[in-house]
Amino acid sequence: VAYAGHLEAAHRKYLAGDFVAAVGEYRNAIAVRETSAALFGLGRALAGARQPALAVDALERAVALDAQNADAYIALGQVYAAENRPGDARRAFARYLDLSPAGEQASDVRAHLARLGGRSN
Image (cartoon, rainbow, N blue to C red; front, top):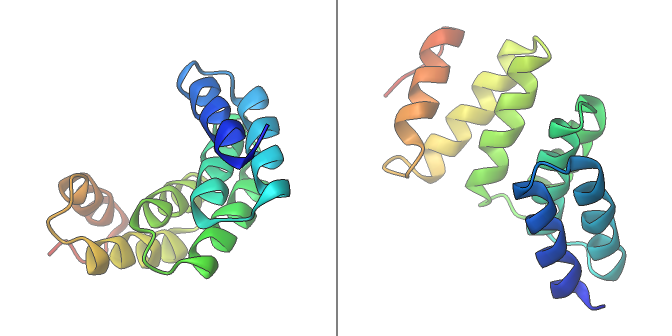
C-alpha cells in the first residue's frame, strides 16, 4: 500500500475513533514519505490516544516541515493547553490566526486565546 492508501486508512480510523489503529497507519504513511499532513494526522491521533508528549513531537515536526500548516498549529495549541503549557498554546493559536485570520476555526481559536489570556483579534 502506498503513502496515499495509508493516509486514507489512517483518516478513516481516526474518524471512527480508533486512534491506536490510526497511529499505526499514519506511521506507515510516514515511513513511505514524511509529510506535514501525515505528521499532523499522527499528532491528532496520538492526542486522541492520550499520548500528549508524542503528539507534541509529531505536531512540532509537522510545522517544521510546513510552517504554513495552520491546522497543525491548532492541534498543537490544543495539546499544549491540555498539558498546562499556556504560553506555548498561546503562541500556537496566535500562529494559526497569523496564517488564517478568517479561517473556519478562527473564532474557536480566538475563544481559546481569550481563555488563555492571550490576544483575541
